[in-house]
Length: 379
Ligand code: 1CP
Image (cartoon, rainbow, N blue to C red):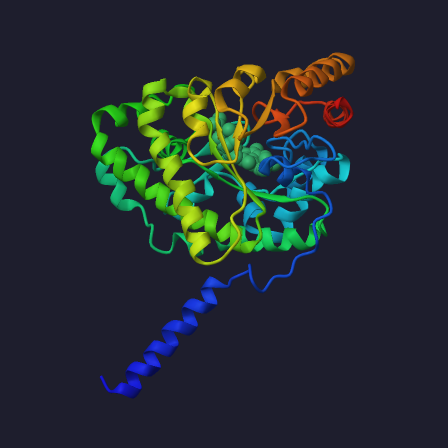
């Protein structure tokens, strides 16, 4: 190859890489953030008021969400930035929340890896051709997965503009074990028994599977930050099916790798690192271990006592949670008292109020109003 041709190739290579590295982030001046209590709480800084948001705050308990879902299939909403932004905005129009979370689902990663995922009314996600045996891992298509998820980045960038700096925007992902569970079970499961059998029967292939998912997740989270996500949450919702020993073996190393590699990549590219939350449902047995993974915030489910959690994680971690979603069905006075009690236990410093899991579809709208107001008035 002549010198001139080599020089040309080098220029093309550099131009291509500079361009992809600068998607969104550097060329997107976003509106200035007005309410940054969420980010300050995550960083351990002083807050004006305890920030509050609710897992699944955009969803089926809102009539306007139900209405929009009558017109559009679930994944069409996820894949159409205008619709994803509309749904993300719905709870913010009604409630004085301190955060927004981009509307999507954890199962968009399995989709981008080549599996079909359908959303069946009244059932939830269904994967008609799950991963049954280790051979099936060959069906996964990690090459190009990130570009198949670009619609999430587009929705995030659009949402940052639509928010006009009102509150921060949270991006999210499912964690490796939780995604592996859905991909093997072919949907939700009360026991995750097929996925747990994999861990015992195919330990080496399980590691391969979890590492493949971890790689895809790091790419995906980096893309979300570049697109404008101001905080990230990693949902390890299926930790609840594992023993402590299994959690430490099959979740912790991958959760650590996600945090470490993301920080490393962002730092090398001089992109500010955003705060990260780990929500490992049912892993209250390992709070100390969770606090050592580098995440800024640890999400708690409602089985965990706030004071015990604080003792275990120490003073330098922010806690998020953890009202029982079922308490949203109590009468308003009871709900107000429980919420106030919870906020008093956690305190104003290093705390983000939330439920201990997603809000459920029949929750009365007034309960959200009571919850948000009670959090803000508690301290
Ligand atoms: O038809 C519908 O509208 C389906 C309801 C629905 C909604 C509103 C699903 C199906 N996903 C979502 C949105 C969603 N999912 C969000 C939106 C952002 C927000 O919080 O407002 C988020 C963060 C998720 C994350 C998610 N999806 C998790 C992790 C959190 C958790 O609840 O543990 C999990 C496990 C899923 C899978 C999933 N998607 C949908 C359902 C019903 C489920 C659970 C199925 C099951 O395991 O039984």
